[in-house]
Image (cartoon, rainbow, N blue to C red):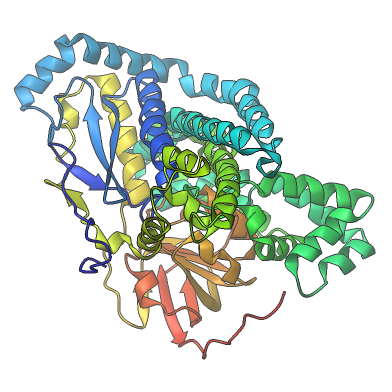
Length: 580
């Protein structure tokens, strides 16, 4: 792609001074133009509000778009623009004790741990922000864009973009209550016992219900109703059009129909990625049918909870006796808040993004019908102003230009973008210079970031890929290489998901999986959380699993060893996937 003359404007020039790092955890390709504005404003606003509330010395991440790719710059409180790292040690020591804003942050950090502020925020999430976000999403969902005239559709497009920005801000406002207690627990356990993040995090199994799927409770209710209904099981067993299977289930009277409708209402408008270019659950009926069938077969995760209790006892015995009461407290706090990690996405921007996509695709259908763009899907590559202009019969941008943008977004990958611009990010401030409250918070954040991102350094070969071990156990199955959520429809029950990284929006396919393998991520990445919740083998942070393991190959995933072995190459691809 780098030398493709079709994309002459793909240049990677830093948007400002200082280090800029490519965002690789959430976006595997360029971002659609409609998504840019909500992300650029919503993410830093929510992050800054959360960081200030928790007394962190980092203010926020400054985002910038470079040739369609998202780059981020960490911004410290009181730092000059583009600073490449902390100031010299003597100056930093003085600033932390004399600078009013920094002193205020340090004092705030002390109160956070004294009062366990995350408890207050978890309560607010449950009582106020999650119900309010649900209400607002449902209000937007109640409007059918297909029934609107042009002026009303334009107003709705403005509404969904503003709504998406607010939902992104809400997601990032809850970053720290969702993860700081976990990081604090990890840091202390490592200091007391030398335990790896994987050992410590194994004790959080069972505390993230949504990791078992979007609308996990609704899916469980549906599977229970289906087990008790012969008519429901007959409808589910139908082959052919998966949408017809869902329609048949929803049309049934009684518990099965009611449970199906409740489940579909929650999943159909949530995206499986972070971009309006990503499909929603409702656009993947084959995945939903397979997930329902897998759920009827039973929940594998509960069988692993007994092993968690044994691990807890063993790890606790390694903690010095004087610290065991604090160990119990820290573990309890981490378990208490852990569910927020997925909930803050699935009730806010995952839903808001899907609702925005529905409106954008309606605009795309009208523009394609008028010959203004070539494909309804290309509408995501228009800015809001451009979309409004085309709906009002303006002529720019041309269909050819929009198609070029769509082709670039679909074909460019992270490998085409440099990992950083100007220079790599500098080191964090030395812990020994920080006042005690800031030191504890910083140590927790450092432990958290390491657990999320530190990957294996083991050497890979063509036959064996190595990463970080998640869960004991060995599983053999078909490798399904998924570079983007658009590929979800190819996943069959029992497949081994091989992907760059997962997010909360991947949860819709999780009931289908036999094992998970990722290129990126550490012991606290989303894929690792999912593997623990389901009790399935996982190997994360392999670095290049998606380019080494062939799609369709027979593989063995050894969770204990952290190895994936290619047993047999893929058979020749069939002209058409097997029907459901």
